Image (cartoon, rainbow, N blue to C red):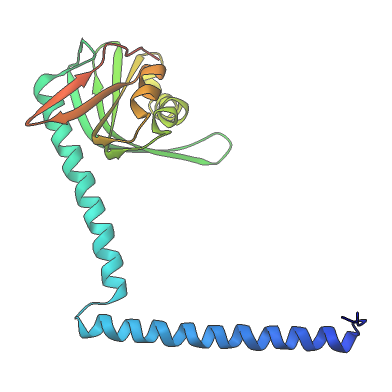
Length: 196
């Protein structure tokens, strides 16, 4: 096969062909999406509604999990062998920092007594890496956002209906308690919990 030197005209011709192919691909994809939208409409559905419904289901699952674990902790008023006087849920706090930036965080469940706080985050499914996020983000944010409790001992917990593999080991290593549904009750795994 004979090698041919490419000229500027050859390169421009290749660009033009690539551009033509990309436009054809875009046209075909637009037709496909249009047909898909028509099928959804025939079924009485809209893509926007489907996305909204999926997000809504996720939110509902999270709210259900939060209420389930909150009710148990409120009834028990104890976490990791420590008695607490007050239990709050879904606490959001925003604070303007000295550098002008804003710090905002949300805490699913906060338990308080005279010298300790328990922060229990609720997930429908606890995912790998979340225990580290609690230690590295939730604890410092709580201390900054709630300076009255900055010197209190902070205990951490994660409540979930399911746990990804390795979350339990990660939580145990970091001293974070676990709450999980077992039948109709909640199982507390807190023997390794430490104060921050």
